[in-house]
Amino acid sequence: MGGLSESTAAAWEYLRRLPVWLPPALLTLAVTLTGLGSAQLWRDELATWSAATRSPADLARLAGTIDAATGPYYLLMHGWTRVFGDSTIALRAPAVLAMTVAAGLLAVLGARLVDRSAGLLAGLLFAVLPGTSRYGQEARPYALATMLAVLATLLLVTALRRPSWARWAGYAAAVAALGLVHLIALTLLAAHALVVLVTWWHGPAEAGIATGEHPTGERDRRVWRWVVAVVPVALLAGPLLVKARTQQSRQLSWVDLARLDDLTALPGGVAQSSVVGGLLVGVAALGAARLGRRALLPVSAVLLPVLLLFVAGTVVPLWVPRYLVFVVPFACLLAGAALAAVATPAALVVVVLAGLLGLPDQAALRRTHEWPRSAPVDYAGAARVIGDGQRPGDAVVYSPRHSWLFLDLGIEYHLGDPPRDVLVTEDEVRRGDLWAAECPRPAQCLAGTPRVWLVVAGRHTEPLAAVPGAKGDALRADFTVAQVWPRPGLTVALLTSRPDR
Image (cartoon, rainbow, N blue to C red; front, side):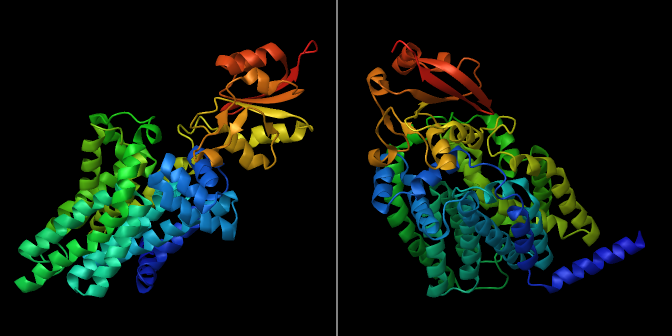
């Protein structure tokens, strides 16, 4: 036992000699790279692929129709895919890099606000959370928002401690980028505003930013410089917010109003593991108690965004746990402060325990990004079925078309050259939308087609019976089922025209 403690202490001393950001960043990079391409792109990532592979003009049209809030991220991904391609790994690589940087910045922030050990432990804990892997392996903006949230907070601390226009300009740029990437992450500004006001009223020491006395005039200048720094956010994100508000009924049609029990489920949602999320909350609470007034910034950075989104979500459908992933590093900072107060072996045991408790969820999220994990959607398997049996002159039909499953995008991504989408009258790119427009008279559009590949959401032994409306009537009237291939989350059927047609 003594030897184990000595080896642990030696390893810890080695870690402490490294730059504080390096071990968390390397661990996060290693964890998020593991199995990066294992899970198929899920529905939200397919939307990213569809948008990122459009021209800037087409992206502007899309932003004007349905997805203004994510438009800047799509534009960033457009440039990325032009250079690195659109493979699953290429699409997810920016998220990996963002989470890696977030872990390193978190360690630096913890060292600034508490001490080096707290920063290092916070970064290591963040690295092993299943949520860090989940959103660090997703072609969506949440990892970038997490990185920018930590960066903006670190720059705020730096500017409050040693004010200069250059430091405030850096903070302004980080906050503006945060708003462009993820509008809801701007709720973090409530925490920043609180810290700035406390700094102005009582001084940096009371805000947990620094110690020592600062002249009243200097505190006044800090307040006004912060106000000036957030002006670019209003100028850039304001119009985006107004436009996104008009698109909310389409973009968030699947979201329900928030309820009190949603708050209890939030830790498990953002950590992607109920047990790990509960552990994180418990240790973070201990850290807040230990820090006292120094906990003002990280506590408000966790609680205020959550409370603001929850209150808004009780009136407008906005409550989606993953929208709050950017608060997780601040919870880890509090947890790191608690762990730094105990013996090093015990602190590392808690970090390792969090990693071990999250292993089942780590494995599950690398199988599928769908939720629940037991309900994957096998776009790639369906595409292989069609690709193996496809003949010249074949057509494909999707049901439902206007669904968040994006059946057509999933098949197109994996197949590359799918059969003719016979019912499409205007594709999604021309429409400036995420969905294509279909023929209002399916029977006429299907006329003369010898074989149809039917892709239906869900598992169906009789897939033709699952197609509703005029589309289903036309298919049942003119085609018979030749073969059915059930795949997780969907069904593929080959239809052949009736001999008498």
